[in-house]
Image (tube, rainbow, N blue to C red):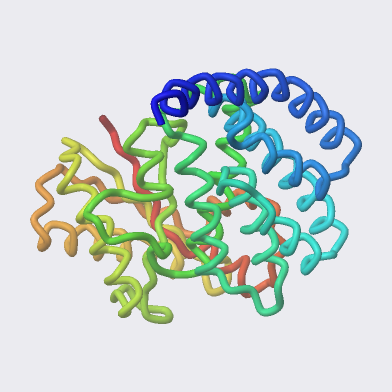
Length: 300
């Protein structure tokens, strides 16, 4: 028994040495398999690396594997092979911003599109892209442009959904509002505040969005904000101008009732400023829905 006790650490050291020796070979094989597009084989090698390689190497390879999977899935989805793309994404080792973005694109191509699901995926991708604690983002080429692209997609999807995107109710801002709180390239936030048809009164979905906005403003306490109302091009230009002014004022009054103490400036822009489309394939009705929006600007 005494001999076995003393031999055990020696055996463990020997196994560790063998594992360390095997790791470079496994890692090299994994890299070659990914580069050759042999993802099933690469996944198998990655499993063998667990326990044979330091955790840091395994984590880095998981990121590489996941990014490659996301790129392949994006190519499939763009080619209209949505089910194949979705099946491939299930192999991803983590929910990276690329994975979430591709999931958002897939959901947007389903007919009819579930805009709540689309908004959820793009908002989460935006959260990951603006995470100040993620040092790997600094290595991402064209980070600013990528953030703006995902922000535009998240914004359009949320406007089409007509209410706040699904997210954990933990009292914290999410998605577009979280990006704004982090100060990431957001000058104005098109907000999905819905009104009754041809009226300036908030409907039930509009109140949900207004509550979400009030919660955000109460938490961050800006000194001055501007609300800009917009209308779609149907109807008379004068009527659209008046309606956009009234809708901005309705939202301002609602926020004040909820306890927002910021100085609120309201502007009506009628149909003069059409939305900048993100590239989503939309019907004419959906495009008009993007026109009907209220934009929030945090002046400080």
